[in-house]
Structures are given as C-alpha cells and as structure tokens.
Image 1 (cartoon, one colour):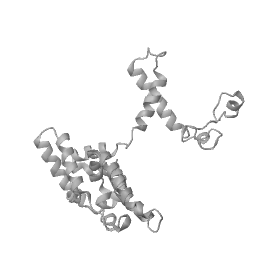
Image 2 (cartoon, one colour):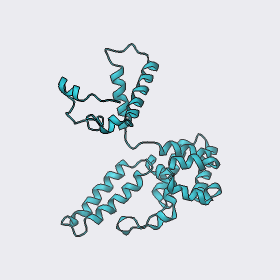
Image 3 (cartoon, helix red, strand yellow):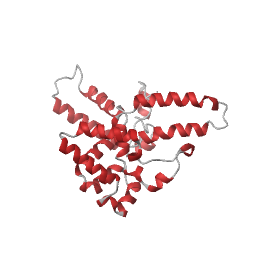
Length: 236
C-alpha cells in the first residue's frame, strides 16, 4: 500500500521512455489516456494516505532524482490531490473535532521534520528501514499518527492473502465437517497457515522434487499415480 501511488505515477513515464524511437510511439497519447482513466477509477483515499505517510518519499535524495521521462519529483505534501485525500481520510478517522485537529498537527510535524523527525538518524533511517519499523521507532511524539501509519502501511494491495485464508478455512470447516465451533476452526486455520509458512524454510521445500509446491497452482506434477507420489516423498 505504501508504494502503489508512486509506482502508478512513475509507470506512465516509464512507458513513455520505452516508446521513444518505437514503432508504437504514436499510440502513446491514447495509451496514457487509458492508463489515467483506469488509475482514476482505482485510486482511493487509502492509496494517497499510504503515500503521504511513507517517510521515504520525503527524502531529499529521492526528491532530487528525476522521475521517468525527466519529470521532477514532488513530496506528498506538495501534491494537491494527495493532501485533499489525506484530509478526507482524517475526517473519517477522527472521532471528533479535537482528534481531527490533533491529527492535522501531528501530520504537519512529520512532514516538516520537526522534533524527533528532525534528527539526522531519523532521516537516514527513513531510507534504510521499512516504513513500519521507522514509525515504530520514531513515532512516539506523534502517537495517533504513528498508529494510523502502521495500520495503513501494513495493508496489502490485494485480497489474495485473505482469499488464501478463506480457502484454508473452507478445507477445515465444510458441510461434512461442520461441528467445529468458530474458535476451534480459527485455531486450526492459524496453525495450518503458519506450518505452511515455516515449511518454506526447510531444505526439502528448496531442493527436493516437490520444492516450492505451493507457488505453481497450474503444475500437474502432483497426480493420483502412486508411483509419482512415492517419488515425491521428502525427508525433513
């Protein structure tokens, strides 16, 4: 979530660079119209908020580097669309006027690099650390904003991870196996998902005949043949 807004902005410039001296260069204008139209439909307040709360995009070295096609970069607080969407988000997040005003105050402190954000090590770590770790380390002076930043920057940009959990849940709790209560089913899904993650660090996952078995859903290597299954037996 913290990168999608900036990536979409750069994509149009990258396409323009690729089309220079290309036989399809005359199609760039139409292509840009299609991309901008699609982005306007996709763009949400959450994308702008993630862009505005990522400390990396305020780094002077990043801002001095030209974007694709030589377009100068702008900090999030200098982008009118981003600022408007951030204020809109705060109107929804803030429970009352006092909390909204506090969020505006803390955002200004972060964007203007005041207090702890002014320290040299905070600026260096803005490019060296992940945004979530950075806010966990330097967000003590702006606790409300830091809490929002960590939640927003932790969001994935697709629902694939959630859909994977739903698929696991349907395997554990289905029509034929429906006596499990919700608490027990949640524990089993948690255990199943984490065992799957831990298995990715084993030698058999990396080197055996069944290596990376969960990354290629189209693979036909697993079939009903007992001979093939015998060949796939992996030692931990």
